[in-house]
Length: 292
Image 1 (spheres, rainbow, N blue to C red):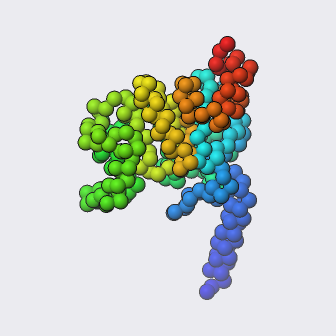
Image 2 (cartoon, rainbow, N blue to C red; image 1 turned 90 degrees about the horizontal axis):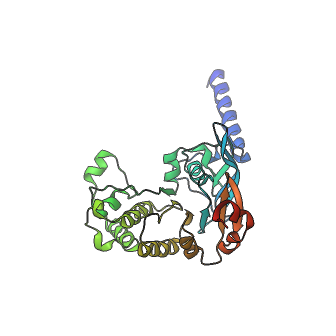
Image 3 (cartoon, rainbow, N blue to C red; image 1 turned 90 degrees about the vertical axis):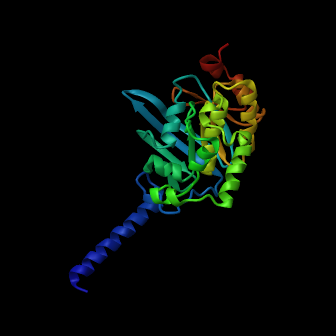
């Protein structure tokens, strides 16, 4: 080996060691948050999602103002607050759509969400459902779920792919869970609004997410559909972490069952936390959100 190659090799080794040291320090620019092949979040400490001092400004307006929030593994957390409180921006930050001006966002103890792209974040197990359902209306319910399977979707793989018995069982399991087994062959565009919401939730579940972000999931649903949705979410609790942004206090009450934590956002930060009864009796919450 020539002296030049030895020097080049030494320089590369020093650079690699420096990157490793930087990653282990856990700083904002650390490489530990980059998703490598097969990377999985570490939930050993019991926290699924941790936001710390997240600030987002748009033309001088602080949509999020030093927001700090922790969601435990398997927890179902309801988040409420008036319009403009920062709920959507918070989910945008978690899913990589918006980059904050300041703060940190961690998935488990080892993944820095702020260093990842949107598609990377989806791949590591964070699924988001928007208020308006987005399904493939020209396809059947079954075909929608089939498309959502974790699989190789390159053209050649799609042409020659065949569902395995395990995959068929998984689709049947999700159809049963979202109350759409009798509608499996029905065109998705013919479903009711509530059924389309369930189908989109089912499509997320096909990806086996570890964290689900659900934005006003029962908006526009009938009372019966709302009740069934509450049953669905409660059945997912423990297997997945769920963050439910909602205005329907009756639905929030059904999900929290009198003892689970509710977070109230106002002007981009946490105004109050506690049981639904606690926050409903909080004077600040009453003043800015629930009304006297």
